[in-house]
Amino acid sequence: NAGVTQTPKFRVLKTGQSMTLLCAQDMNHEYMYWYRQDPGMGLRLIHYSVGEGTTAKGEVPDGYNVSRLKKQNFLLGLESAAPSQTSVYFCASGARLAGGSYYEQYFGPGTRLTVT
Amino acid sequence: EDKVVQSPLSLVVHEGDTVTLNCSYEVTNFRSLLWYKQEKKAPTFLFMLTSSGIEKKSGRLSSILDKKELFSILNITATQTGDSAIYLCAVLNYGGSQGNLIFGKGTKLSVKP
Image (tube, rainbow over all chains, first blue to last red; front, side, top):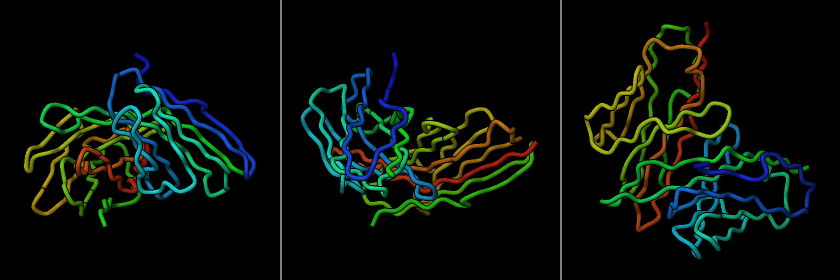
């Protein structure tokens, strides 16, 4: 099992460009998450999905869109990149165990995005 | 507003020292508290705590949760340079079916030889 993979690992964009980050998981997890991590800010939830075809906003959704067309993939899109979106982006997946609690979220290796 | 606060934000110790990292939280619909270790890449899972007063141990690391006082501690004994990392505390907020994690800002631990 590869676990959670992210593509690409690094990217540099110019202001106003668009791009899509791909997250894939092979653990058949129901839930998937996109976070951003900035120095001194911890991990902040951008969007999440509780199942195929569903998405919801997290703490910092503005400027991002997501789609979950297949259970194993969760895409994060930036339609018009801004320097404030320079960050490290982490995808995670998780599953609800019997009784309703999670064991953990599994994280991908991250994508370092720089917007100039 | 839900929040998770970790302290200290950074810590420098020498090999062999024992450290205690703190995590306090104010979260509605608390479900569990999780600790992660983050080195250069993705956070890796350490512990999940759901019940008060039950210590979880893994080698030199241990953690405990106090649901009355709303905090958790992570202890590392006989620290090694390989323990240098950012330690993240997160609370699982089980509202509805989201199961979202709310993260603290992390404690950066540096262990000097």
